[in-house]
Each structure stands twice: as structure tokens, then as C-alpha cells.
Image (cartoon, rainbow, N blue to C red; front, side):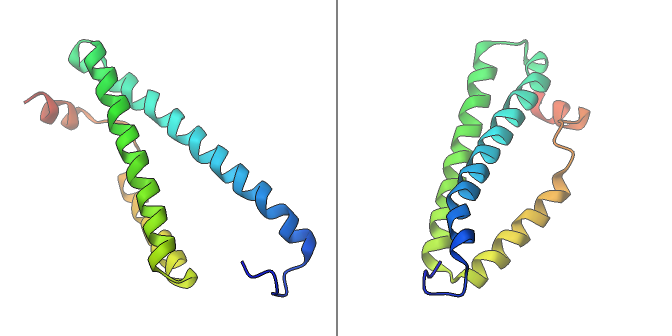
Length: 111
């Protein structure tokens, strides 16, 4: 944000708190969803440590992909296009809800 803009200084003082809240919320959601999915798939494969480790690896890799996405988005696109791309990705995520694995996924994974 440009400090010379018409944004009041009181609002500018709240920006770091907003960023901190968003980072906390995203980490909370990640570590809420990760055990939830692992809880569903652990019994499918016998509850071994390898299943839990694979789940951890999967979510950590996608966290790294998310960081790369955020870096590239802010580096290459203007703010307007950043918002457009991010909103499109957020709305496209609605098509994969609910996040619980189905019985069809279980059959596909075990074959």
C-alpha cells in the first residue's frame, strides 16, 4: 500500500494485525483439515505410520505450493489481477466441498 494514499493512519495501524489474524486463521485451517482427512483415511489402510506420514507430506507439499503461488502472484501481477485470480481460485474451491473422502475415493485408492 502506498503510504501517500488517502487511507487514514488509524486504518494503516490495523493492517499488521489484519495480516497476523489472516496468517493465524490460515494455519488453523490447515492444521484442522489435515488431521480430519488423515482420520478418515487411516482406517482404510490399516492405520499405519506410513499413512500418517504420507498425509503430513501431502499437506506440507501443498503448503509450499501455496507459498509459491502467493509469491508468484504478488511478484508478477498487479493488485487488480491478484484479486481477480485469487477470487476465482477461492470460488473454484467450492466445487470440491465437502472435503471428506467418499466411498468412491476409497475404492479408487485401494485399487
